[in-house]
Image (tube, rainbow, N blue to C red; front, side, top):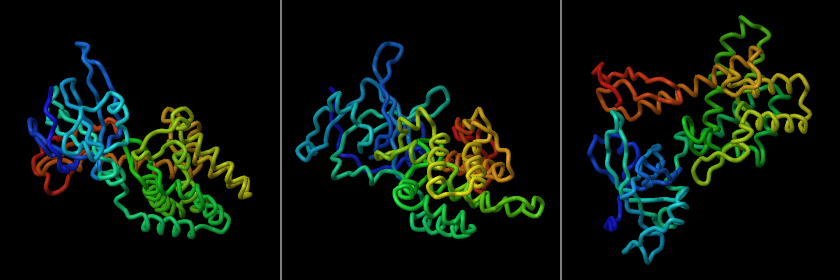
Length: 353
């Protein structure tokens, strides 16, 4: 029978990723996901994803790991073993872990050998979930400024969309469960970045293409991921909803936009032009868009959306590289390795593995 671990001290996910093979660590994180599997010998093991304000960490938990319960005051000094029901209910809870860095077929692997359910009042999950690095008041001010830059019909429509429950949900929502902006206020941060980029591109091309409507670009960029307020939830970590899984955010977003546009009596011309941006912003049918971008405005928003996604993937891939490393591990969402060309990356042969 394994021995109960001592109370754990905070070690963030970013610090853990800096450790080398065979180094041990302890940390306090919130559980994003937990999946039970069976190895080739029929023994159970688990794959757990945890997070804190610094990022996510994927770990393996083997059958000899210890599961402990310190969730109530009377258990904090002497832990009990965690029940199977307790293990199954860990998603969204704060746990203490101890683990070790391993190497598996040339890839870094993180193994948790002890997992402890902590007192959720003493260690509230909201303390450990990631938020946008940009303060919400700054994001809200940027949103208001962008809306005010549009002509009256579009400005008033956008004000109505971002008011009330829709606006509140939009400000709080993540932009994804993983891969990019998967944290509170991530949807607002991503949408503003796409809008800034798309507006800058539109201004660049406006002299060449005089019919280009910059206000439609702004509206389409701000609303392109509207459906994500119905596709994802924070509970307290980002997770996909049932509508998000079976309908996807593009369909949900267009349906919501069409309803809001009808209620606001938006002109048919703008409903078509902005709606087309929402339906085409993924750029290709195999990426989920039911139609391809066919207008100047839709082409620009689609390009800006893809650029912001890839730039975020670059930042996520290189942020944990050590000095002297300049090539990241393979990034599956972006289907590439990323190259950091900063001055502290001196060794051209160093990799992120």
